[in-house]
Structure formats: structure tokens, C-alpha cells
Length: 274
Picture 1 (spheres, helix red, strand yellow):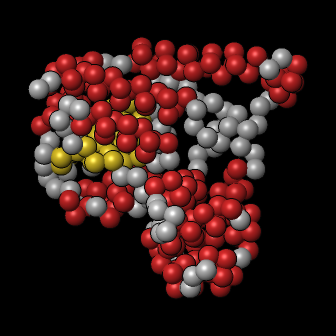
Picture 2 (cartoon, helix red, strand yellow):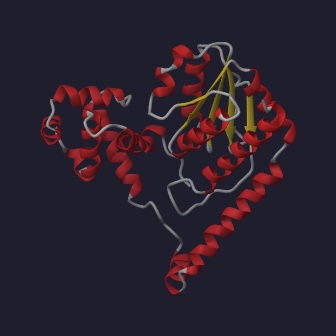
């Protein structure tokens, strides 16, 4: 599967999060909902025309784009255009597999669940409980824990946040794009930052880790990328697992990390229950 830049794939997720969590009276809800409803038109639309569609001003549209960590409206449109282009071939089974699915829809069930089971078994075999205990200890001894993930990994982080709250351990899970940078003022040397990234692309990771490290926290990276290394990261925990090659979205990868965080949650409860 091709590796995509974070900005190109996360922009749509962030727009959806505005719609999902904002009040319908919120202007940003209106802007995000309008953009998603007219997605194919956005790469060619002018800022004035979008403002008219949203019943707001061009200045508000410009502020909205900057709040999405886009330099300006032109940058925002470029990211949308790339995201649309990437989604055109979202599902691309081989000709053989596609023909098999047409003849027998259950073929797809067997294929996807078979791959999921195989990938989870790979994760299971790669788990080292000594390292899991080390992660649990780092979480327990840190004054605060901040999780950073993109796209579906944000949902996984939110799920972990709720579960850890039941252990009376507060975990911050950033939902909106750019929150991980905007909240750096509450990160310090007693903080643990946990980054979840299936592929850990160097271009993204290096920039993010460098920025986070300015506040001198401990940093953990959970990934499936065995080749990535960064001296600024205190601990890299890498799991095995496979990923589908017929969709531009992560299938097995996100499931693998959901299972990993569930394991950490249960183990933490056993070690540090109140």
C-alpha cells in the first residue's frame, strides 16, 4: 500500500469530526458540513463562493482553514484535491479476487476475516509482556499522559482514554487536527507522550517528535514499522502484523493497535488497580 502524507489523508477526518462533535449552531459546523456536501467542487471553488454557500464571510473561511493548520485557503483546497484523488481508487481488489467476489459474495467475508485473524495472530506472537509491563510502568509513573494518533487511531486513543479513566488514570487524547501541537503548553518533563502510527513515516514522525521534544517529555512510539528510528524517542514498541494491499485505508493495522491498547489497559489494571 502506498504511504500517504498525514495532511492529505487527515483533512477529511478532521472535517467529519467538526460535524460529529460541534453544535449545529456553530459556524465551523456549517462550514465543515457544507464542504463535505460539496466535496468535489471544493478544489475549484473561490473563497468568496464558499463563504456565500456557508452564509459567512471570506475572513471566517480563512480563519477556519488556519485552524485546520492550513497556511491559507489555497493550501486547504490543495489538500482536499489530493484527498479526493486518493479516494478515487479506494478499493482495488485484484481482478481474480473481484471476479471471485462477484460469483460468491462470501468469498470477501472469508478473505477479509481470514486476513484479520492472520494479522492478529502475528501481533499475538510478537507480544513481549516484559515490554508491555514497561509501558504500563511508564504510564503509571508519569504525571500526565498524552496520546497522539491520526485518523482512526484517534478513535482508538479516545477508547483507551475512557478505559484508563476507569483505572483513575487521566489520559489526554487529541481529537482535532493540530490539537497535539496546540496543547504543547501543558506538556513538560513529567509527561508521557504516546504516539500511535501504523507506518511511522519518517517525514511526519521526525517533524512531530522534534516539536514535541522541545518540551522534554518521555516519548513512546507504537508502530508496525520496524525500520523507523529516532534518537529523540525514549521507547519504540514495534508489533508484527499484516496490512491489506487493496484499499487506501488501514484495515488490519488499526485493529492491531486496538488489540494492543486493550492488552495494555487490562495489564495496567492487574498491576496498578486501586
